[in-house]
Image 1: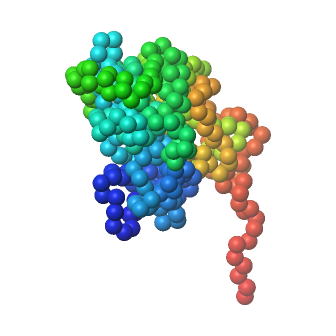
Image 2 (image 1 turned 180 degrees about the horizontal axis):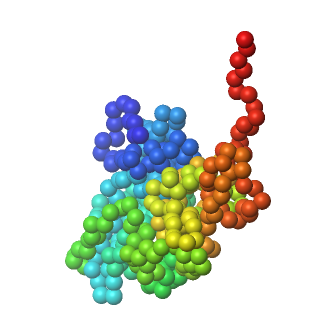
Image 3 (image 1 turned 135 degrees about the vertical axis):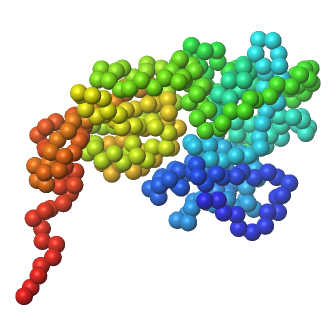
Length: 343
């Protein structure tokens, strides 16, 4: 998936790497994700019919593509400095234009820290993120999402799940240096897998970690705020199962229970926002919302038998029983002659 044509003349600058197996374009040719392409201020990421490529001549290693990728398929050695203090660790980060020198925690752009990075810091008991930065006005990298926006979203999620939020504190370069040097007791992030990190934090917030109860009619979805919430319009869905088959994280699953039938189960805590379910649905029945509350946990299916071909099928009960024709027969005219033999 990742192509790099030509020699890299910026060998001193770390460049992002792409895990092709995680990228949504490796999972489906219908994937519409352009997150890294749109986030790059240099136009270094290129998405063509041949796949995703990086123009190493254009890339300056800013890392702004990292928080944009819904699957965290991109990696770059960017990290903050963590110091152990009473009441919760502090994390120190500074952009390379802030004038703090070549200190620990300095990175090309502070806005390369995204929501999942904040979740990881929070899991490490960090409660303050202390930053020093040069004015973003006039900087070529100031084109996408800001760190302040990510902190704001995490603040909403933390408070909604009854947890202490993460405070962002802007200081002068001098105060940043003094704060970093005042405590030489290093912290350090535990080894936590990048995939599913935010989900595990949010499940810990809501007390749902490790629990996966089977769906039942009448189940109420979690009232907690979720980062991404997929939904299926039962009046449009034909029961083709394309969305549940392609979802890489089980945010949409086929579930069954005795005596009632089958359902598509919706687990918002698993959703990363990759939009594969939206891209693959040819009925426009799947939608995806950000920073909202889940309205329902399941779309219930009913078993029917096609009145044209006689095949059994299942579709959402919201469609009603007035149309007992399977999705194949709705599209195929069986009376049409495909071949005609002449004697």
